[in-house]
Amino acid sequence: MVNNNKRKEIENQENDNDDDNDGLLTYKKFKEDINYDSIRSKELQTIANSLGLPIIGKKQEIYKRVEGYFLSKKFKNDLTNSTTNQP
Image 1 (tube, rainbow, N blue to C red):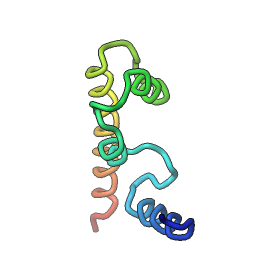
Image 2: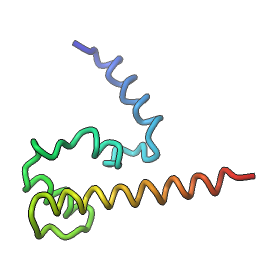
Image 3: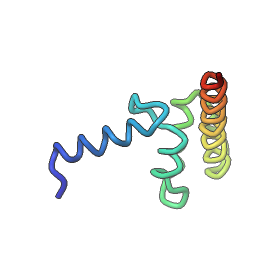
Image 4: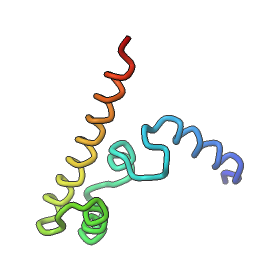
């Protein structure tokens, strides 16, 4: 069993590694935590709705829509970071 101090340390390390460390779902967290086979359509619809994405369609369509949203956001963040880090 992991004690609370160790859990906070692990969470802090994970947050340090994420571009968005404010607890929001990111592309990395989405791909790691959300398994297509085990997630229900309603849960995907809730995620899509919270992101302002359409919730109509089959489960696979909604999953791809959410995945695409996070992928484009990650690409924009990576692009922004690479241009700001250039001399």
